[in-house]
Picture (cartoon, rainbow, N blue to C red):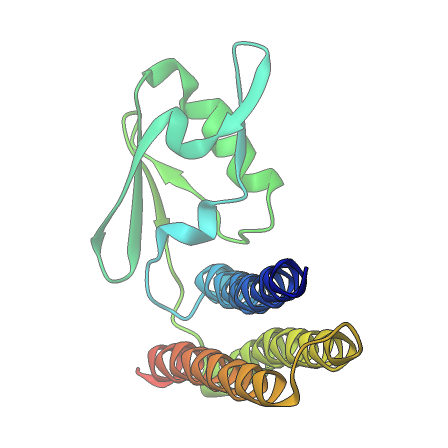
Length: 202
């Protein structure tokens, strides 16, 4: 009898341990989502360099449905200040131009009948500073999300003690959680630093 009780207790403890591992994994996944969010948002910020990501939100009318621009054209950056859009079907050049004009890209397209070009304007010093502020706000949002995940998981771990998780295991898990948190804050800072450098480089 004693043996079977001990076995059950051991199984229960193992289940809790696995749960801790899974909980930390979920925390990391949520923090990764915050980093991906920041990366996508920063890509959309125009910093005077040609970046095809600014066209990610453009949808083109094609055979009765609205599709992403890269499904109807080849999008490239022939130089640092130009985005070239070459439609697969030349008849769609007007639809593509209209889609760009209707979007929030804010650049008037030029075309020669075959290729649409977007010339990226060089931002002023003041505009660059505004862009840095804008990016910092987005980065702060992502950091708040990472901190919220940490707080949320910390609370879960504290509650797990009541369910039989040992205090030592809880401490270990909390240390691991802090390491994951620090790793992602560092990642967000690195993304931000690279973007600031890109914005401020004339």
